[in-house]
Image: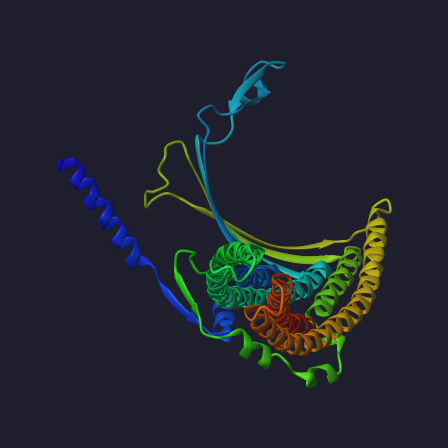
Length: 446
């Protein structure tokens, strides 16, 4: 009993602690976008890519800066190498040889080398490439931000759509339950046929099932929004904007008259980066045919002893120093460099063709996005008008049905028409928001 009580208390404590650790957020759409741009997992790594590109740029720059290296070498010759010399050098017999050892058992060398690259064509191209690499990372981050913005708008709208659907379905269900109750009472009095009751029961079952599914989708849609915003799924998020106001904000007919400049789009700039990278690769391969010049300065000390006395103050050290200049001149590579240069030239021509293709694709995408956005506004106007008509028709049919003038089939058809009009209207609103988002993404409009 005591053990069970302890386990229960631990469970309750952990549950309360988990509840306390949950965070609560409240966002407008603009706030949700701003939060996602800072906390989205992909956006965070895109920022890190820029930081890495900056470090890589500096790494490339340092190749042409002075390089200083130092080293200390110690050698223990526990068996010295032997050699032979004519024995007569030491008073021996002619024709005989005497073994001798050269060197000492302990050797130590300490030296420092200062090197400097004076000229290298590939290094100059490398500096330019590092700059382009940084631009590629920055453009990739901008494209990531545009995509995240579009995804957040879509996810935010889906949550609002799900909530609006639930509200409408609950209202429809409540109204239908009331009508069913009244019709059933009338049937009990023998004033209507049982088919009228059954027809309403079928419609109510469909509405109930659709409502349950909408609630499940609402939870999934909210979790998708949390994921793209970089928020823990267990946290609480409240959306303060509503679908109707967002739709109104995104109806901007002036946008349709704006001139499209393909050079301002992020996809075109990325394609330009690709072309520039290919051009620099070609330049790099050509630079390999140029000579390279470097210099180095060495300064060091040597010490020799038959015992390890290098740390003693009376140990004798012998210094040395030298200055060296190296010139490397490529002469003949069996046409290997030529083949690599030709490959780079082909890649450059391909990049230029891809840039042209990107330009044409963007023009076509803009036309499609503009047309879709314009059509979504038209559909929104039409669906709004149709919804009002469907509401009036359904209300008239309900009155006729209760008065016994209209059949249950006609009333049910009017209800289905209303339900369809309601969903069409909600979808039209979300389409306006999403189509505007797609158009803004293509035109790089933030």
